[in-house]
Image (cartoon, rainbow, N blue to C red; front, side):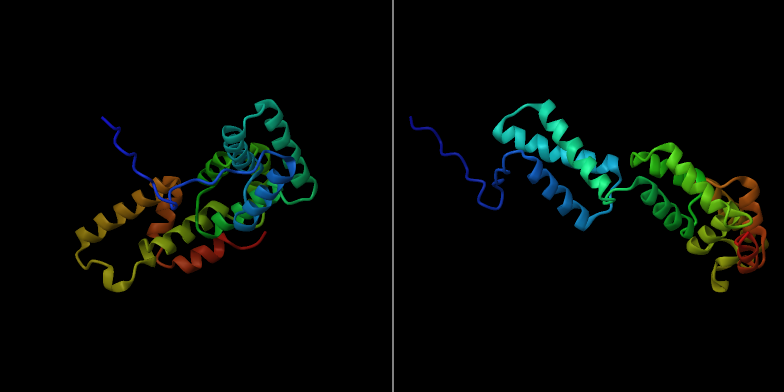
Length: 205
């Protein structure tokens, strides 16, 4: 009995073999990635190891030699300042700060991207030294973005006092879940003029 024909996955599902693993090919992979993303050194290392593993799976080769090529390309990118974790950390801190992300959450996000803790702390401390009350300013930005407390449109504020108290408690809880302290959350939610509070907290030192 003749075997059943295997189904053809079709050209759209066939994977093209990668080139053989060389330093030049890995460098081109890195530059292609940099045109689309801004990675940390750790993230780029993971990208290059994935590319190297795929090439090894097709063509064979030594994994230690492949790892050495990855580190060589990373060293070239660092020397050319195409990768810079200190700059990466500062840019992320500035962006997250504007969005109202608390300091502790910013630190965790950057740690998850493989950035050295000392570089993260340097970026956070530099940002915090620019304003009077950095965490309060972030909480104000978060409340404004999420429309909590005084940032809630007037037509969405309940008239019933009991409903207002319940809404206030939920807003405080939302800020605490985001990572802000209870004290900071109460200041923001109980403030009748969020813009004035944000201006005071965000004043440059």
